[in-house]
Image 1: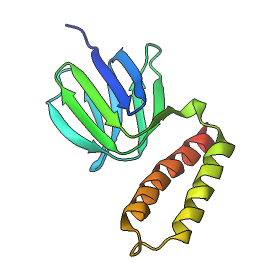
Image 2 (image 1 turned 90 degrees about the vertical axis):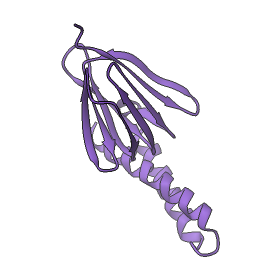
Image 3 (image 1 turned 180 degrees about the vertical axis):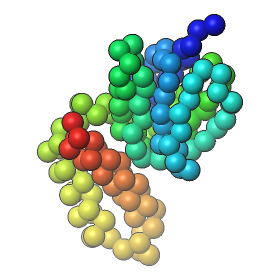
Length: 138
């Protein structure tokens, strides 16, 4: 029996990852969780953080992912997230500029006046913070 299973990471812009892997680690809302072949099926929320998979060289390939969902089946994992980017592709200056821009936008509005926009910006800031942190580690 193969130790590998299919993993897909999908954003509104398309498929970011489609690969056979032995292990993944994902940022669930209840904490990080790992998946190996034959894992108990489940559906869970994903929060902004680091999603990684074990490659052929026994090294983890990492992505920063946004809010979304993860469906785990016995032989596959599908991750649907708002955004996903490989950590080594993140430009530290661009990530910092994006975070500063979002902070300025958040400071310019009041939660009570436009709660939907406030929530949208807050969610985008979580992703931006993850990108800045990942860029510093690279």
